[in-house]
Image (cartoon, rainbow, N blue to C red; front, top):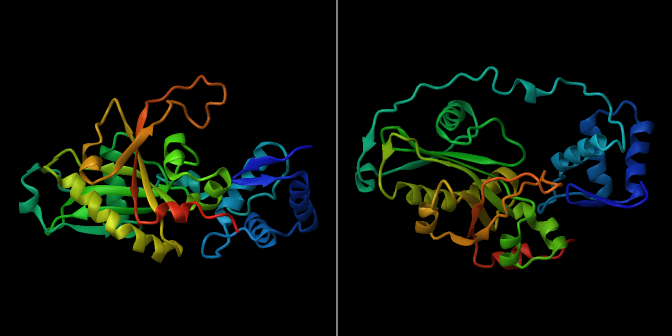
Length: 293
């Protein structure tokens, strides 16, 4: 490799690739996790609160290996991803029709559904009733279930990593490429939002969205050590009108181009999506446009 390449938000020079290959050669006893941690320490590769970006480093190593630029040590454990979903047992749930008013349904409680029986119920509902389904999580994420006072689930949400780049959002924020690379982790994507088909409650969706946005900053800080500054979501134009996001005061800033990140040859077409944003703090642009350290 004669020139630098950009992988996982980092500009890698030939010397960087050489450094990694030398670490692999000089430390044959290191497993992949140890290697990624050593790279984070050597490069001071940390997030906003100083925690090593270990997962980003592992992903970078895998991408470099796929490109044929290095050979990683063999895995010491079987990849757990291949077992995800195989032992999953759907949770029984009440799917009888619920047709009422939001006022009658209140109070509604928002519960974190990242583990235990709530996680299994959340996954059951997403797999069975969301049009995109659900397979697995990658990277940072938080999931919620909204329940009535008698414990019936009425909505599910998932927040995770933001899109790496999208022109309408990036123009709205006004950040440079380097600022985006440094601060993209402070943008969170509402990746899934489900109201089960048997729930017929006007204004429920916008109410639950508002509840989630009030909880999200503190929950994210408790789990990951920092607060997000902005939330984004993508709404398929030919399937939805974005009514609940508009009612919850999200702002539509434009639309996608109908391409995917894998569309290097400009041949793949996907549904065009409206891009909605919701600031989580009044100075979100200042927070997102900070210069890299």
